Image (cartoon, rainbow, N blue to C red):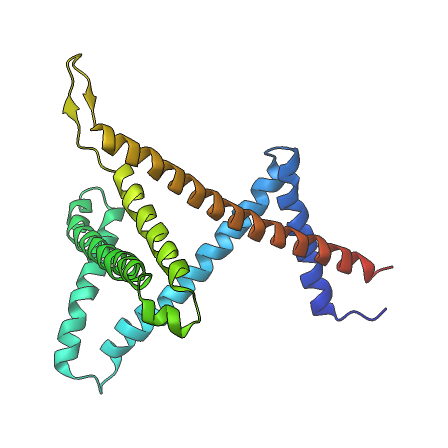
Length: 230
């Protein structure tokens, strides 16, 4: 048996951390916590290194130090530098209020990016996909029967409408003082729950399948590592 030292070290560490994580099967214990703490620490360190070298250094510090950078660009770079300095004031209780300026800017930008991403990356593609489901020309090009294409399109449209009905919270006061939705809305909301339940079940099955695949890969790696010594 001739195993390179690097492969031996990486294999031993992989074997060790796999056992540490698997120890959660007997309950929360110090070994599992050690493994989680190390993973979190390594991930945080990696993210910090990436943020420094690929963002702060490459896009802020180096351009400010580079003599070839135009003066106007340096003036614009002074804004994020100032905001970064304001965030550092949170370490001082007296100056922590100054950091709220930078935090408000970050939260506003983050909210704007999230909204645009949700609209452009989720809402519009879903609307377009629902409309395209009734495109008979595309169905004919794919040799799909017209009635089958119409059924699929109608099913998708029904799922969208019923699922959105589930989140309709407009209600009217009843004679007993309670607030209830209209009967037709309640029926549509109930059907929407069925669509949502099926969707979440499919998502859970996909996550479970991915986790099971990872588990099989880990067990296989353990078997291969032990087999190198037999």
